[in-house]
Image (tube, rainbow, N blue to C red; front, side):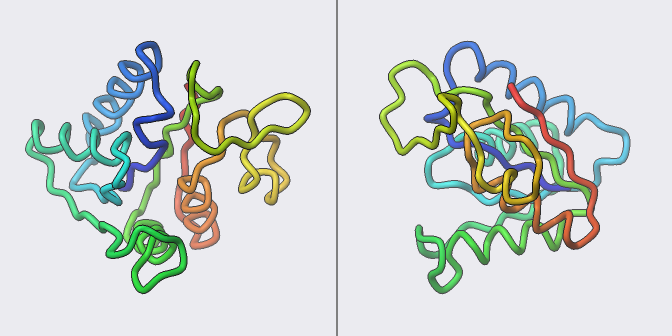
Length: 151
């Protein structure tokens, strides 16, 4: 299974503990034999999932990008493709809104955060944009099971 989602900067004191509980619930499933992660350089879901997997003694396969850009030699795009390909089931953990004081890049449509990856697939966006959604749609194209958790 794979677990991907937002970086730590998208979570606040309310959404962070919920994300941790979702990760624990996923990794506590009966059929968990191992999981994949992308080891995001900005922390968040990838790193938290790795830490919890370590605590639980779950085997992991990590695909860190060698270059922190999208289309580089083994950048984020290739890393995300590897996660999609190696995961039988992919879980995406995202936030609905930007945290107060968030100063990074934002995407809004009609005054609400949106994910252009989901809208590209004609799915109404109800969360902040994430490369995790790009990974999810790639996994769906490979006929993998994909589940979104929106906090």
